[in-house]
Image (cartoon, rainbow, N blue to C red):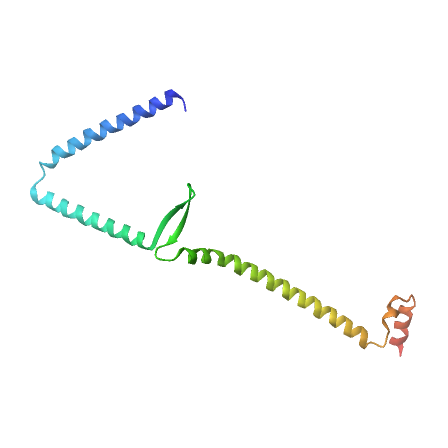
Length: 148
């Protein structure tokens, strides 16, 4: 980034800080003018809101936490679970996928074997010897058996 860009950003930050300081001073000055009962209700409401926010953060942090690994990457981990259990759980989908692929391959192989066995059984049970399928007169043989 150029020096002019840095100066503009720095000037913008300074301007925001001055506006925020003036706004805070005005609010502080006006806070003394608020009646006591209203300021007490505001204080109680503020404390209740802070308590709810703390409870929500604690509940969320108790279940999940972000743990940084190797600098910029992060992983979600369940608090209280051992690290080896999380590694095992992350490998589970890969194991299920591999098992599914092996099962599909096994079923496909079994189907091919069954079809080949069926063809072999039909050839062996037939009156026609397997060498006849290579014979040029095979069609004539089939025509004669159909007519009988």
